Length: 87
Image (cartoon, rainbow, N blue to C red; front, top):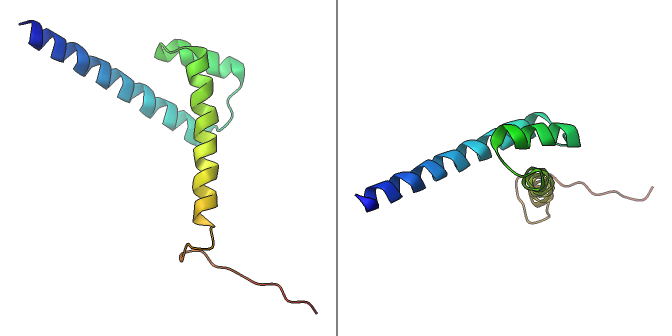
């Protein structure tokens, strides 16, 4: 009985974290830099610390920049490169 309660509790935590993460990602797609007031509202609605929400957006912006830079790197064959010549 204890094991089943423990597993259910962990499953509920996992589901809640997944919902929080998906919600934050959806907000991030719409607004990369929400105001502190908006972040406070998000943290209250999701039951997270303001610091957690702020860190999420900061890290998400960094990951987006890193992904963008990786896509444009010279070793990437899907990007086009152009060269400038002196006239």
